[in-house]
Amino acid sequence: MKAASRFENFPAYQPIEPFDVLSARLGRPIAEIVKLDANENPYGLAPKARQALAELAFANIYPDPESRVLRAGLAAFTGVPAEYLMAGSGADELIDLLLRVLLEPGERVLTCPPTFPMYAFDTLLNQGQVVNVPRRPDFSLDLQGIRAAVAAQSPRVLFLANPNNPDGGLLPPEVIEDLLELPLMVVLDEAYIEFTEEGGRLGERMSQIKTVPRRQNLVVLRTFSKWAGLAGLRCGYGAFPAWLMPVLWKAKQPYNVNVAASAAAIASLADLDWLAANVEKLRSERARLFACLEQIPYLETQPSQANFILCRVKERSAVELKQALLAQAILVRYYNIPPVEDCLRISVGRPQDTRRICQALLALAGDPDLEKHVLAAWADSEVAVPASPSGPTDGRSAHVRRQTGETLVEISLGLDGAGAHTIHTGLGFFDHMLTQLAVHGLFDLEIEGQGDLQVDPHHLVEDTALALGEAFSQALGDRKGITRMGSALVPMDESLAEVVVDFSSRPYAVIQVDWHAPTVGGIPNSLWAHFLESFALRAGCTLHVTLRGGRDDHHQVEAIFKALGRALEAAVRLDPRRSGQVPSSKGTLTV
Ligand SMILES: Cc1ncc(COP(=O)(O)O)c(C=O)c1O
Image 1: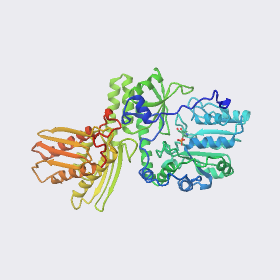
Image 2: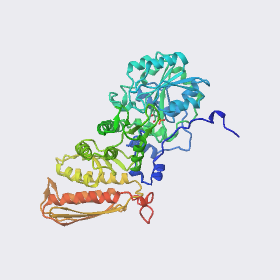
Image 3: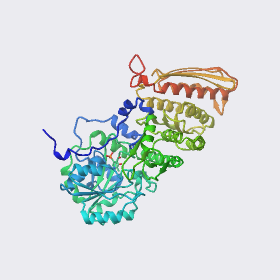
Image 4: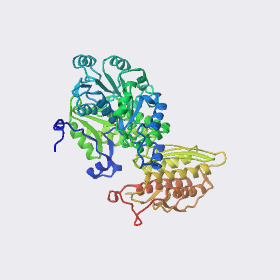
């Protein structure tokens, strides 16, 4: 038996490795890996998408071959009627499908490298020929070259990523108009359009998708992989000219969008505020990453409108730099083909990811003054930048919103953070204490709390504790691989606080503190024990807090919150020796 001869020298696509494979290869727990090599969304899927997956019914039944509910949602989202829309198992599937229905064997497809390699890969797979018109050194299109190639070789299709991968550059709208005059099908791949600076909310002002119905030769591809964090589920979509739709329906695999991807995509469209907030965070993180990369003397940085930044490595080997980063569990994409030889593409991550990669790059620059200067400037900006995680993501983070008739508390927590925090409860002293928890526990923490302070601080302090406990519990998930117990003894001048915590799933609190006055910072001292008990209840932990001595109530509370941060940090820390195991002889630690 033998495969078709055209596959004898067929160039294989180089895919990216997933977290678990990387973790095994690098011998590092997933939480320690900074994965900036595939333009994935570090904030993960929207809470509603996560819930939709948890509640997925009928996975035993084939999906709707027409993806009707999803296409109706996409029509509302994009403003394009559903009859022009088709969903696919990622935009990748639609690139293949489109070429399958457009190309006769030997027909040509025009691409403008460097660009997304799937255009060439799928052209070859569909027995077409690739015509390359390389971009100029500044990554702009060679329009003359494109026109000449169209005249000489009559390609059927032109693929353009907008913004382009790997440089992140956008096409001017007048260039798109010009290219649409050419006698071929123009495919605009808008995988990253949601991240564009001038694109408004989720790229709506910049996308060409709305213009598809009034044209005959424009296809626009989009994906849920990047802005909506569904890369692993595989869901993309496209808008196609009306004349092409019947043949696409005929040729596509009947059940191409699986029920999980479909449910998560539909739910994502119902959670746009949450997702748009993450896109905003990534946009501002792109600016911070860019500012840092620009200061690294051996990098030449390309401005980008997408969730990645391309850098040319000068005066040293790019591949060695990639390896040096890999040794620190930091993954970036390396290119060795002209015109991006010696280039690295770095995806935009969370603030703690930016810090890790920039620290590593600065250390390799071998200039301690520069390192100090850049990192000192950061200490301020990190507090101003919104804390990284929102929503339960594939990393160890959680988003909790707790609303009652008395309070509204919203918390985002990242366990593997850098202590970035924004905390507003309207109770200055309480904010100061929660800040101690974030800074000394190295948790990324955003807390927005409002409540009936006209009554007294009780409800807001209590509900913040419950929401914070819930956030820890959610972020820890099944508690596999954690150290589980942690303790800290922390002084504050004359005060000395001892905190011992065990994420046992047995809520229990023993609080032994003597106070000297009824209140501190406007908060009754009796509330601190209540805060700690409420936290333990929802976090599913055993908590012992003992004040070994003290005279000043402010010092006492502060020592307790610092010690709580330290003890929690120790307890939630991942221990590589326990990787994948629940640290309990019972075999479960779920509350
Ligand atoms: C330009 C471009 N288009 C499409 C994709 C793939 O999209 P999907 O995950 O929906 O297949 C990528 C992924 O990296 C990309 O860079």
